[in-house]
Length: 187
Image (cartoon, rainbow, N blue to C red; front, side):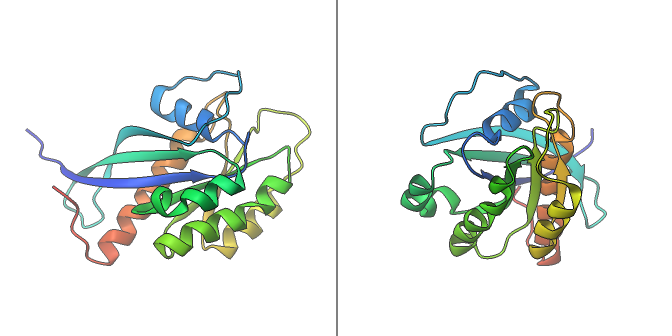
């Protein structure tokens, strides 16, 4: 029988309203998509286990990922940022490729997280690549990601393109950072 090490991690999705945060989580956790827009009220917490290699070469690592979704209104973010972001180990910063402004607004979201957590790993997600008339291209994403020493993915919650990859990539970056600081995973 193979023995697995385990690690728990909290990740938060941040971004403006209607960029697809809830749909990305639904696609990742349930492999499902619903095109009816239902605004997130407050916060919603989901969980999923992912599997990766331990960076110390000791085999497989099971990650119990707790995923926090928050409504996209700025006033709400300010009101509850301490409770929402506390303990987060990584961020998925989500923008909508059809609305350039949603990428620009991510700086405020990220700084809000950093004010509570300090610098933690980020993956930028440019969501809704299945839609026509994008306002964002690769160059804008490269520039935004570079500013935070991050990477980015073009995603579609509708088709599932790069959704699993984005969550997996963030999980692996968090693991690498924790091992680099010699933090032992929780058993």
